[in-house]
Figure 1 (tube, rainbow over the protein chains, first blue to last red):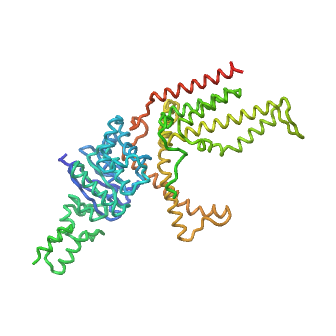
Figure 2 (cartoon, rainbow over the protein chains, first blue to last red; figure 1 turned 180 degrees about the horizontal axis):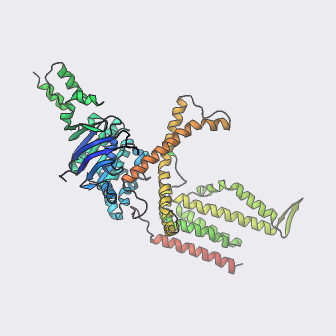
Figure 3 (tube, rainbow over the protein chains, first blue to last red; figure 1 turned 45 degrees about the vertical axis):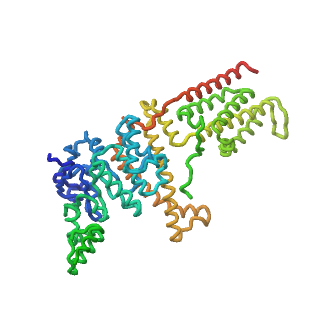
Length: 279
Length: 267
């Protein structure tokens, strides 16, 4: 095994039993390093959620392999190790909170792992502070906003001390405020705690924050690279039913009109720089 | 708003009774209920009443909450009293046509009535001072010894927890669906019972479908968080008996002792 944290080999997944039905994923070969922040983009049905579920053994590959720290997810004796190493946050915050009190919910994962009560206490406090929800620890989840609930869900994963968190469209059901709260939390966990992040999203503005963007379409990886390299190819991105961040689109339009501006602009600041350098 | 409903009848508080271990409260409530049947004399009920009032006083719960539970059994209470009053044979005190009240009937009726009242007040004290989720914990711990004979203690508790967790969520959802249907001209209020019941169908169908979808997603999320049933699971808040629990047990046994003493040795 190379030094990849997550490695897939010839990964194929087919829903249902019939071998001739269309695969959701086809021959995916990808490696993700420890500490990387990877955004996975793709339109509905591109296989990105399927890919996420394969990463923590919620589903097992039809063909090919997934290795987490060198452990094959097909090894049924290691399922719980894998799920502890790779935590998963889902789209709907309501449907992943189990307990009636925030801190009890965060404790759910560590409780399942059989950790001692005083250690659980420490982990719960640590996790709630990491997502900035500590003062809400005695609240009932249904009294929180969507963004707050999603941060509690993330805390519930952090409390299990995973090395990687897979987030499956965690902001899809949130309002803009909740979305930015959650994104800030994710970026901080990656930069400060060194947790590997795999973010599945269809918001281009979120993908820009990642170190690496993978574009999927029809169960295959079509593009893989830094946000700059991926988004600078506006036409190719569009052909997969996706869009580019607004500023990138603006620079694309400006370039079409003959204005000499870099093609890989992702943020407003870069746009300002680019425009100011024009003579 | 629907969102603000409280589940159960828990009255928040910080009293000694509130802070007792839920197992203590459940067990002592059971002991209290059973011990009520020891009493055969009126003076015994005075001891029981004193004990009950003592607990109510300690719990700082307004008396009117504790008797609220009686409203639900008012009819049963009345029937019990009347049947006992008129049907017990003995020395006739008063009669009119076929109705007779006997001395024995009267005392029997009063005793039965008091017993029911104490029973209800005693159990409502348990639910008034214990949040449902803590009660669930208590029940899980108490049922654990019965696991080997097939009592699914952990599963029951987990089901109750999830139900409690999702009641507000589903209420909110009902509210939302109802408004969406009303916006499209649905009418939930007018018409007779049958019509109104029929108008609930378009409300219940999406509600149930959504509930099943939620259940499915929740199950996956729980598995992703390493949930594998009750085996090997630890708890953040472990239940521990404290000195006040032992005092509570002691006091209750004193009460039972008094009941027995009252039954066999006092007039």
